[in-house]
Length: 419
Image (cartoon, rainbow, N blue to C red; front, side, top):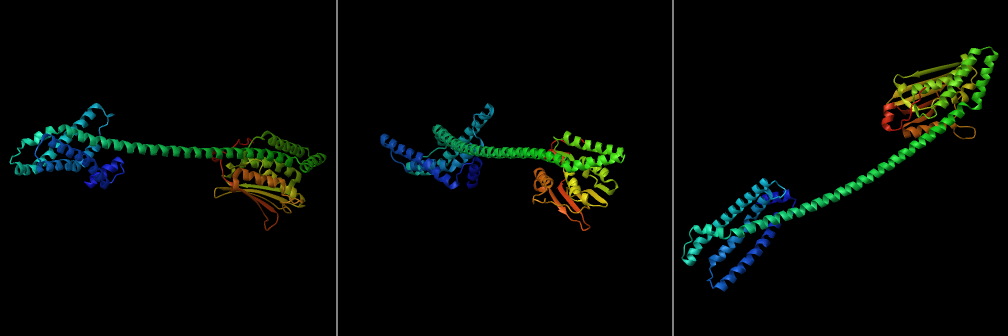
């Protein structure tokens, strides 16, 4: 019985223990039993019937049996719940089941009364109670039986509805709370999107500044003067072909800078091609004294990096180191893939690359390059200087290996440079 009650309350989400149920059931049927007993006493007084102890016994059995059978009535109400949203045939079927069940309960209760009071009634009155009394009592009390049964079923349905409404209310509050949390998260995402957009704008601004700085660096008077002087010297030496080649390379270099001012990222192969235009000018200038070696690891050429990243570093190698060497000068550009990172090494045999200017400030090109790396990759990229044991200077760039697909996925890819 206890397990049956626990199962009913658990499946119905009713926070009630069997002990509480029995207490409430006693109060419920006890109130009806008290009214019924007062009615019997009043009826006997008004009619003048003699008092029989058997009648009191029968009264006790009738109402005590209601307490005993209530769990089974609850089970029937739970198992065959009458819901008016059901199709009519299904609804009529469940009503028929309840009528059959309450008839069976009524018959059982009256049969129990008869078996207990029959002998007591005979001893007290001297009259035998025939078995026909069972059906007489059943039909005489059938309306009260139906009313009591419906009252229990209706009460159960009301309680279930109340707790389900409370549960729905709690779920609604939970959904509202979840929606508020989602809205808060959405707001945070929007803020992050705005921050990302702001960072992208800053990157665009930084790129524009880098392009201007690249123009200043490539068009600085020192470089233009040396190039112009070399062209004149070649023409005076009747090296017209070399002079024309230098003019062409200078034109290609300047056109590339101007035509691709709106480009964000380029492949390593494109950046090397641009840098080679600058190296070609230096190769004509220094002639056989300059030896350039470019060694790119297979697969690294497709990695994307900010444009105009390498040429300023190469030019600094000439300005701060190689131009002061009287003999043979060497410049090596190497790339290597390591742990999903791209390593670019620019090494020369100059007198030593100074990252500080005489006024104590970092070189504009170096500072600009570091800032662009941070804007593009955050802490994932770095630029450092090394002093090889055999002399000279090495600049090492480390940045994430990212293809065009990777950058589209990350949302930081602009156009590519059509060199």
